[in-house]
Image (cartoon, rainbow, N blue to C red; front, side, top):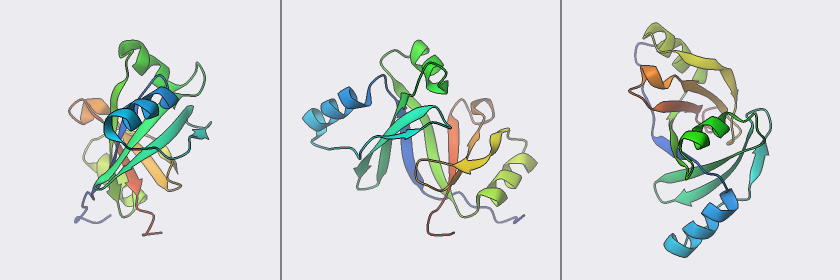
Length: 141
């Protein structure tokens, strides 16, 4: 593990929504932006669409069924809201090991995320109340 761990750029802000279609229609009307085609991630229990912006992305996340982890979030926040922040890292396994040495709870093992690269999540109670996603940069591996 490197002592020189560095957090990369913000890749996206995850926003939980009750309906991606309705949210995208609203974003198009208000901001003049469109989202990527909706993809389903059954292993994560969500559907996602990305709104591409000059400095990053907004990831719209909708539950994929009643067992989705997003369902409870939307029960507490019926209109939706910020769900997580995603930062890029060079090596997800190094990042995971670094977080563990710092006493940060890592939620699960590295897995493939919506961008097709490895991701992990850090427990919000260890991160000032914000769920943090770390995503291995696609250009690294």
